[in-house]
Length: 135
Image: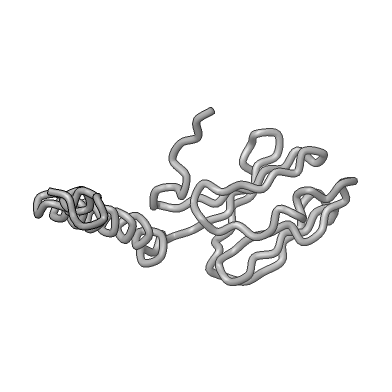
């Protein structure tokens, strides 16, 4: 049926089934979003440790619940642990990329210093923040 302007009046109408489907889809998306984000913010992954590797071999392991400064490689590299986060505070490498990587705290996150052949990885009993990477 056409209205006074010549447009079909039923063109912009939505059926009850379509409206119910849209509401259901939005509700499912909201539930999925809160389920995924709640795991990151509310689940505590205890105990959390920073594992330090040199040439692929574990050389140190520190708990992140205690604030401290730690030295590696005879003082050439300094690691800072504050507020359950770890970062490279000082390094003698040329470009200081490891220092610019910032603080890490979630399971599976890493900091790499290629010139010193050091890798710092956060480990915990929980699942890692990123579970897969695809190209």
